[in-house]
Amino acid sequence: MALIEAPEQAMRLARAICSDISLYNEEKIVRSIQQDNFFDALREELAEGRDLFRSRVTPDIFGRVNFFDRAVVDVILKPKGRIRSKIW
Image (tube, rainbow, N blue to C red; front, top):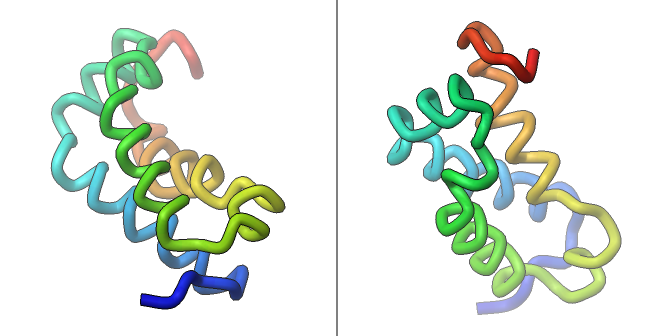
């Protein structure tokens, strides 16, 4: 399988990976936002997702723009803005 070189495709991949993380870890995400430990609680899931993303895109795309972290915010955290938390 060829590595992704186009920024648009890389962003779609990052968003799809984060969508899966969100889908399969909904309760854990909600609880971690409430307890203000999102990145600690989902460390393994986010690392696995980032590794998958890195394996599917060119090194230039991976190093140039942080598509994966942007997708974490846009796909996982923003939709959960209604959850009461000390962080917002």
